[in-house]
Image (cartoon, rainbow, N blue to C red; front, side, top):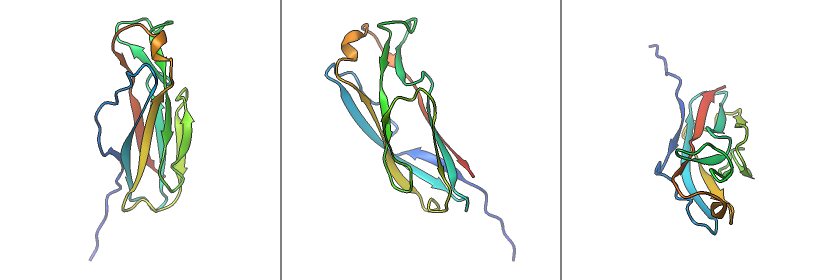
Length: 136
């Protein structure tokens, strides 16, 4: 007999809904992510922000009053954790082992500090946080 198993790696949000960060006194919310990879060498995870760690007002010019900075933290074992920080650059984690075959769960927390919303114009603010997993 002979067979082949296809390579499969990914990050799957347990609850992919939007996070409400509109509280002027600051806000923090978390979502769970399941990391799975069947590569014996593990994977590399990259967490990035389309707007370098700021929410940008739709229709604004990204100037003063049009942005709200936020921070992200990651939970979970197997070396996936890091403390709150701005995503000014992508956050790269190399998980160089095979513990992820059955999946490992970790939280992704987002927070806006108190007072950040009070210095922003009224409107809808958006950013996209991307979590990419590639086999090592």
